[in-house]
Length: 290
Length: 247
Image (cartoon, rainbow over all chains, first blue to last red; front, side, top):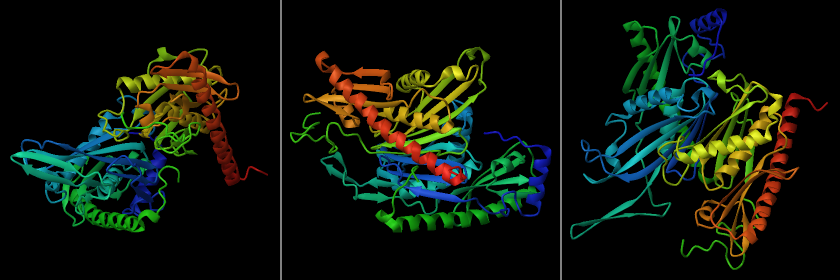
């Protein structure tokens, strides 16, 4: 990850701030930074979203392709996450430099979405045993400003909300199955993704924990708890990361906070997406031109 | 590509442009805070982000150090969702490696390399959406990013492509025109001195028409230069107003 170098005094300053629930940028321990979301930014995808969380910039494109279901889940579709750490974010990502971080993030997403109640893969099934939609969720990391996991999951959820899949009509004629994919851009199906999870990262700073740690705070963190939380507060994935160790009671505390923050985060995101959708075509698409 | 008319009898192209018309260009400087310079450009439906880091100390092996000039290091990558059909890898394939090399050569010629000896300048290009003219948009975006980073250039580098259909040269061709099998000339120029720093031709073109098509590309570069120059001037005046420099 991108390195910020802090002196001991700076670390102590951040630590004391967190203790008094007033962080270096004036936030409380459970506050997120300013977040901007825009959907349908890329016209040649089935769904796309761009999220900017303070300095962290993430672009997600979803492409749907017809394919064969995996042998163990014949009546379900598939969802594939691919993370690309662009060298635009930091020269360290040049070549294969970002691959470790990329696998970390995509594995966490796989884990958070691998739960039948949070994203129903049956809606992607076209003909059981034979044809299904494969959703390729491609995540492009353009700038790192801390808290990549949370920002990525928000962008993924927003892009899935924005995704529309063309309607497929299946006709059977004397045993020959015929697929007809509608090419009408308005004859599409939206995904049911209301209960898909958001990732909340809790960083242990000193004796307390904070959400949405900035790069400087990540620098003072020895252990992090990364969890996938749905809008109902179900925890779909949990992972402890970092070199430090955590006390079982503090893990319980952190999970409680994570659940509370995750619920409101999901709600805020869905409200914002619904609001954007209500504006419809009146909204001027800006993308990176702002 | 039967049934697809690249140039109608009335003289319009597939997307409704005249033969000499460029696509709409929109751009912005200073998109990111972390990079030393960054820029975003939209040429029609082609969207490209460029970031510049440096000049800084050489990263990696010391053997790359050049004692009389700067090392220009480029990386071209395409988002996996940028094309119509999903790409499997964002970089590392033959086409993007070639593109990386072309960008490196182009900017080696345009940057005043002798001013930054024993150092390195990184240019990272990310194609977000591709609709033809990826090289051209990448060069134009990188130029803006280099200007944003304050790196000394000989001149703007502007790139434009052109094609030849029905005895008429077309400028700034899109993906459909590019993949139709008609010839394609890509040129990058230093518009003020009218020097060509990069020239490539794909497809078959009669020698007699070569100069007409090349002239069209060079003319396109000049038009792009006017647009980019305006954007840079607007950006600088905006920045100076914010900082209160004009008094």
